[in-house]
Length: 190
Image (cartoon, rainbow, N blue to C red; front, side, top):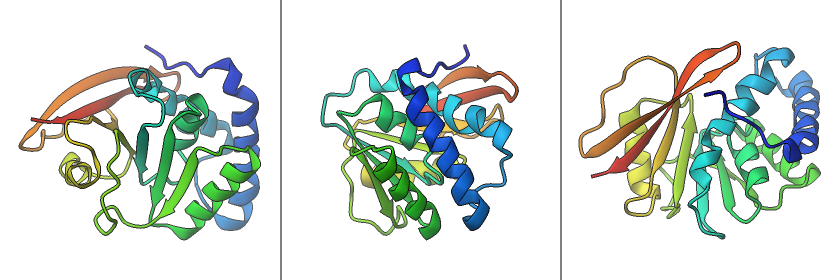
């Protein structure tokens, strides 16, 4: 399955990519070449969109290590009725995300500067992380910040990782056109 971006998001996501290119010239936010950004940052993020279907309006989503806003920007645009927190410890990336939220505008996107292990519990309904860390680390963050029983989605490649003790893992495979096989690993506490 190849993830699909809703066509209604195309204008805002196009502006997002232009803004990223402008900021990247000065702030070196990513080494990803411009021609690869749509697939790697946006299409990849779209793999999480089906997981938003069961979230009630007003639910809270936390994207750990959001970087330039992947997947938080796509999630916030797709579900303007959710509160989407883009969390990162890099000040320049959070400054960029603030600018994105202001210019696009995305009023339900809340950039948050900090470290997951240091923040007060966020009590979120869904968590995400892309290319941030091992499952055991992500599970410890989610244990602190997720509501009891809420799922956590880790964007991963095809490599195997051990399931953290006390967690159930379900793999959701998908394909990207040029980047190949990927998986969302859904973690739920037992």
